[in-house]
Length: 301
Length: 127
Length: 127
Image (cartoon, rainbow over all chains, first blue to last red; front, side, top):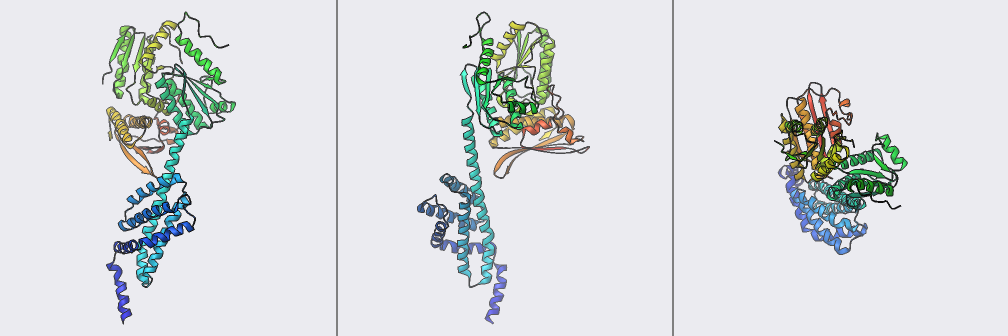
């Protein structure tokens, strides 16, 4: 009976076919159907109200690249090119305000559009359809994962860069007199910021040959123990570079935190407010620079 | 690795040229202590600008040097600690407390001059 | 890298610095990593007959970093909790320097047992 022999043929086929050859077959189909499927996908994207930050032309252009890269990844089974493309794409669309759920959404939509197309083609042969899907699904899922992860990683990288830029702007090291640096800190300090602070300060001491640094923390409401520790380390490191550090603007809360972590406030040079700190610094400098015979620089009374 | 030690007036200047092994450090310490007595130096400057790492052993040795030299009536100044090295040292918990440190050779000499004028031949002040 | 002698300490940290530099770490981190390696290597030389340090570039979750594994065949550390306590004082009796090393690096793992040697793994990630 024809059905029997046909069944027999379909039963032996899996041993003759491999995943790779199945992938080649479905990729050929997807390439052939490229124009229609791409348009279908773009339509669904708009319908789902994704990528609203982009124009129709832009969506179409990106859709073409994504489609081609997607199919290529299916064909080659390697994902490096796709990863690179995903990062590149993310770098371009993130500044446009595209969100993670949109990117994941469009990739999944494409997966579905292609899957439906495969259903349509192989609907007459249930076994064949199953085998095609066996080849397609793992690859498609991996592609979706790769693109999503690439996008998220790129986003995180951009956020880190922005944070770094903000931090650099918010910790200026000012040279007000020769050999005197002032470091006003404003706002809440996190561990990342303290590290940057220390680096900037130490570099500043070296560049400006500073002998006294006034570290003003009037604008800092509170600090936690790790940050307090780091501040103390900063003061010690500055000393190793031959600079004296005067800490000004110590609130009672911060003083308490420092005591709690075991800092001997008596050993740390602290002054109540910034102005007092600057005067103390000038005194220290004046005392060292001015010859003994001349009177010390008069303080503005 | 020998560390060159120069005499400049009443001071000795030891300039580290490259990374020092533990033995090099010990040799430097011993040489400095002997030299200070021999030339009746009033101050010693150890220039560590070229050191890219100062770890616990190096710190301890420098402290020993300063201590022994002080016992012979002279003052030690460590100069040229690099910012990154200072950072690593404090993170590690190392302290050169009680030892004078200056930014560079020029500052170090200025410090010794000031100390010489002010306090004379007595035990140096602790910072 | 085998760590048997004094001179190996310097070699190890210079190699570490090179590797970290190739990975793109900033200057401060180079000093931090080199210092940590120096401390770990010194422990090996001081407490064991020999050991080795393995340096590796690693990657995890998209960030890149450097991994240092210091292992030795020494007597081992019987009381790990005590060894990890900060016994630092300004006089600097530093013991094994492990708490300090942990402060220097991002990740810190230690496995040691009495009579079985010690293995310390530390990692620092590029920010």
